[in-house]
Image: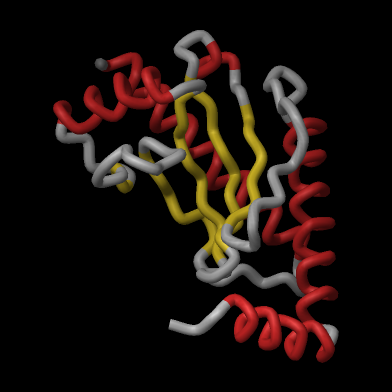
Length: 164
């Protein structure tokens, strides 16, 4: 196992090239713009707090549509750095809520979206890939795709909740 010093030296080498900083800055600017887009396009939704920047593992923000808020559920729009993809997650306001809905979905056998296998250490209940290979050269199209996927995800979750 390599030491922390080894990894810091490698990190420094990569930073000296300059691409990591440019990519990270661009990704954070895009995530901020995407959050603003949702807030502007869906004024009836609560788009609380700030962007969670993460540890270069994931960056996300929350959306609280009224249909989920009363159930203490929320949606997270997540960028996974290593996989370089966007996902939509259903999450609970706390671990107790998360467990309640995870059990409900598991017991129902609903397979529309990926149910996390175990809640331990997880921030989500179900997950959906919104953009597997995002094209950052066309941010308008990417934003449209993520928004469409989020709306469909929300509609499917709402339908499930009404039926169960």
